[in-house]
Image (cartoon, rainbow, N blue to C red):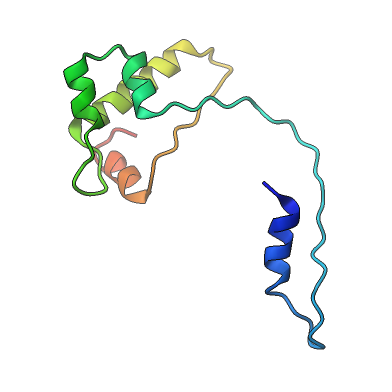
Length: 111
């Protein structure tokens, strides 16, 4: 993230009563960063060693913002595989593309 550009963006919208721009302070907080592994659907299909026809059906675009049955199955299998491969002291995050898909998985008792 470009902190200067971010601060300038918000500074352009903040003005004092005398029409002078506010100076947005930038604070540098030292923090630990953790390595992040990103897996796309193609990576997941390959990692699960899915057959070509099943992988192709899982990778087809759905008609609406939802998970197809194939994608849901692949996602759950991948989460279980990742969970079983990590020591209990480590965690992992799964980011899903929108509240509709999260709600769908919660309603279906997948999450």
